[in-house]
Image (cartoon, rainbow, N blue to C red):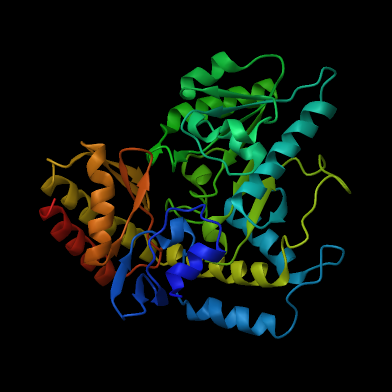
Length: 394
């Protein structure tokens, strides 16, 4: 049997996938089993933040795996403690951190913190969480329900947990708040919702209002966090201090890890939450290295230069193809191009793949770009050259 046949036989077919067999990656370039190269503008959906095959991260993982891979959270874990301090310092937020293995797990933890806050802080129980339409918060039963997309609320997964309401936009959040509202959970840039950043003033106004009403602000930074927007957190860029922030994706540079940062340090106590693998030696050692690499890129100005060059090339692609695209959206290295005809989106992605450049889809009408933050100028130029050639065939 071929590898594709084996995949179809032994892997649950929950993904619509391309059956290319990648064998190696170097920064933002992938090579398949025929040695064809591909410029990666996806970084595994925002995960491989420091590029493929990063030697510093690889060496850290190799050294750690020879010592201790896992004990459990019944014991102190040195790299976990150091990573928690690092995240707190980089975020500028004094708080405590819970480590998980993914973004969905991190969001589950955030919701649990909010629910206990609503149970213990007030005389009358508060439990409702408001999220936004077109949001995405995960694929567990609870985080699917938190996700404001009706097409994800499949009837065959019912019953879903109660207590979630969906606002059509930031302004509409105020109308949805009632006496049982405990938290508002938002993404500052909706990844699956079309790479649309919200206006800074509106977010700041909302944060002030929620603080006054003692309603928690949860910011899902699973995709926007870890320097993706140019700052460590999009919350830093928006100059807000949420009550709870969730992170994952780029935090591990490819190693599975999620994190929840909260200033409400005493809500969850012994036995309230846990994770067997969360914050293990391997993932936290890798993440420490990832954070240091990206912190250096930010401090020495290289990240800013990369963002500006990528933006320049993206906008040139947009202006050269106004018959295909309607607008350029996003911030930092989280970008998108809106297409005029939604039927061309899959064609661009598929033909781009054939030309050797990987791009993503966001929502129904957005071509999404999430390159590694370490992507070189040469790789950016080559990737957009291949995309330009692709668009000429459409």
